[in-house]
Length: 556
Image: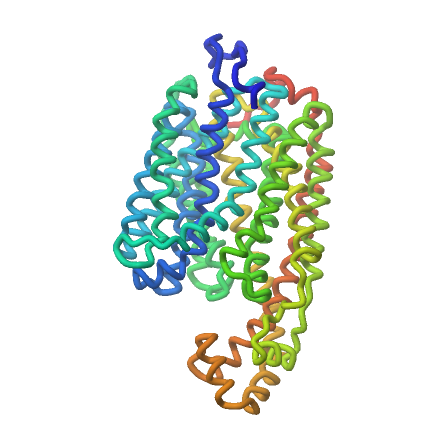
């Protein structure tokens, strides 16, 4: 990072000609981004402890994750536009401060309502800080190698954040901390954000220049319709991905239809107001539009990989939550390595080829996960469980999982860096915030959509396999020693032999559902790959300049 530490500011409307502490600016932005991204997963491992401490039901526990994602994804466009209108550094600082205060409330929460409210407020803070952080990179670092390296670090933090969250969440939750009772380690998953957020907000004026404020006013009708529409769509997709509800659930249907209606109204409003929340001229550039579309499909497959593979490693292979978190540590390491290499290649090779190869590598990795297999007949499941073995005890992490985890990380590192560069390149200075907000929104919507689709696929094949093996398991249980059956019921938390049959049938059928979900993920990845190869036609020489893009038809 030494070559980024001191650099002369280039002559743009937002530079003052003085030397910038670019290295420290990048550290500040990326720490904030890492905090925002990992918070989507850091609380996952703590959920059982939170439920026991605050007496929360399983359904309400899911809102600890969903509430954050819902607020984050639904408010990103608004957060990005506020940065354009009122100053990105200011909005960045406000977002970090809100995030820190909400984390403090969550860490000391004594009730379900306060904790869920704190998670929603965290999502608001993240929606303000994240697009401002990306826009600050665009306006702080000059086009060329310096900006490429900055985006590489940013992309690595964004990609590694989910895995880091699992590891950090497992470690903090396991600490023996007594605040209100003897098992308060979960509170540290919230409280750790407080000093980080406050320090980052206080240091921002020292290392980050304020962006120029542009004339205009906030498009209130557009903000209400757009935010409401995104909230409804994200909620509907999240609910559809929950096996307890699915696509046929009434609230799922109402949310998705309502979201589409509100987003349609939003688009009509945006064509009629003088200062739209989302200027449609952002989508007029073919390369940028292709980047947005690809960044919706590709992370959808990657985030779903985390979901299904983490469940497979824990439920099928018997890993503890913390050990499962460490199983993803190579992903973080490899994506950082990949992003570092790609940042150098970006100045010599067109982004189409870098991102295109990355998508193919990730597709191969997902196909590798789809080939995982375990003995899943009714008799095999009953035999393994009755002998105290895990169904996937013969699956080797080192030869059957680790190579594909690393390949996935290397591929996604090659995807995130060039697509982030092309998505925000040549965006007008006054639109940098909303451009970054669109990019982040695409990733959030894509993640929710991908999880909903793949969860539906997984549930279908899981349930289909359950109907095949449940009779065999039920018959086998009736022939077991009653003491063994009783021990299994206690171990798996089943209230009756019938419930035990259902639990064992699910454990034996989940691998079938997961591998089919991985296979569908391959096609999602290949769809994104097709968009990259066909439509991403910007040259690497153009990415090294900040020259204004040629003006075409004015839209928005």
